[in-house]
Length: 142
Image (tube, rainbow, N blue to C red):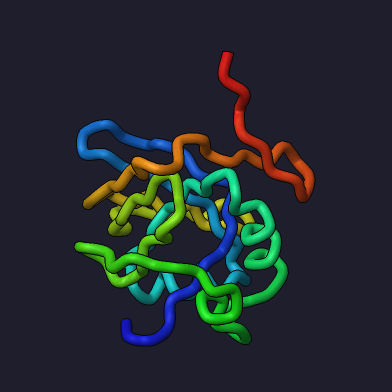
């Protein structure tokens, strides 16, 4: 599908297969991202880096139906190799995924995507995690 991409913070993701490599993400039915994944059959999972906490909050506070979040928040992107959604430049890691299955679970759909390509940053090492509030932290190293 042609058009502008969207970015949405989604905390519900997981590995679902080693061979082939697959990741899954759970998206609410009313979300604009759900509509885009249904239409294109593609998505990119991004692990945010330490400085992206405010960006996560900003992009989660409005809908891509109404706002071009990439333009509004000056998000730097890189071109994906196999899918249309872009990579986010300052992420710890990005995974290009093609939908291979889906499961409706109440008010969400779990989209299982085959990882077609993955990228890990040389610059950023620590992924951000949300522990149930609007603050994001890395896991301390021992």
